[in-house]
Length: 125
Image (cartoon, rainbow, N blue to C red; front, side, top):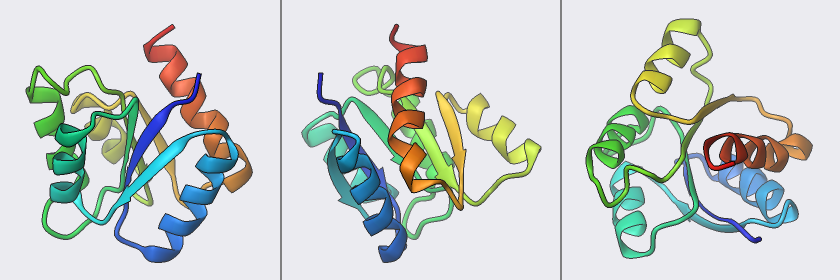
């Protein structure tokens, strides 16, 4: 089964590396540059999983996650933070907002696709 993913990331270099890594792993990837664009894209065509950067312009990752989880139409979509915020308190905050997983930057491009698949499989066995 091919999974679709929305990648919300404002850094063009990370967008490129993550998109290529996810496509290589078989994902269909849509890239957006901030949380507002992510919410619009998710409501227009819900993906199987959402990858969110923490720090983005317009609407940051935690608030984007909160809004997704508070909306019954999007609450079931797994959210994974893909971020440089790697302190335990930040990870716990992300998970407490309803995120299914947390991948820290710098990430291993060769492992990213499998990490995302493993997190999605844990949420939807």
